Amino acid sequence: METMATTAANSSQNNDGILIGDKIYSEVFLTIDNSLIPEEKLSPTPSMQDGLDLHTETDLRILGCELIQSAGILLRLPQVAMATAQVLFQRFFYSKSFVKHSFEIVAMACINLASKIEEAPRRVRDVINVFHYLRQIRGKKSASPLILDQNYINTKNQVIKAERRVLKELGFCVHVKHPHKIIVMYLQVLECEKNQTLVQTAWARPECRDLCDCM
Image 1 (cartoon, one colour):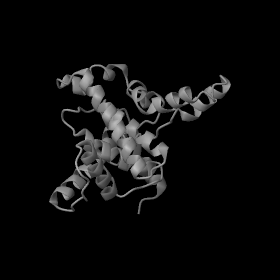
Image 2 (cartoon, one colour):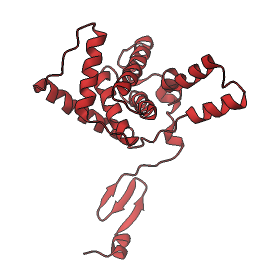
Image 3 (spheres, one colour):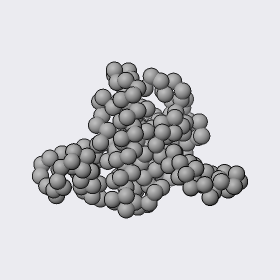
Image 4 (cartoon, one colour):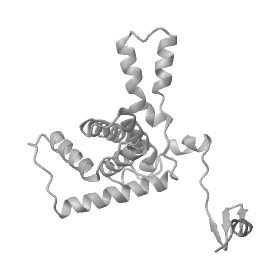
């Protein structure tokens, strides 16, 4: 068995990563710089490069966040888990295209991942079941139970793979610092905490449009 000293002696830093033994392993840097999306990734986005227009992409981003919010309520998730899932969803689609990835599968993956990040885990089956119900409601169909057939198994596998893909694309940097506490502080300083319309608008805004701009 190698001692710690021997292991340390065999490990050295390289410009391309860390050399351990005879293999180079890449590094993940957790800094404030890589928590923000570079300006060059904001426009054109991967979806635009694949021919999707800005209006349609914006609609898909909003729909994805609305689905996550509705599913989170039905899953009885804490609000912070829903907000985290929405941020992950937005960040992912600044790296990948809506044209090549199902926004619904990614939304399911993000809410499943966020539930674990925020220590309120839910079963993949429950997540799929809730999205199945929401799909029926959107299509104005009568609600029917989810059938545990091959289609369900395929969807479950897609969600699990999508969750791994989200983690990979984000470099496992999935910590999210939400602005809600700061919003409350600002409202109190401005003595506007009793203005219900302003409070509601400010509270809801980070979870919809501004996520596209800031995250």
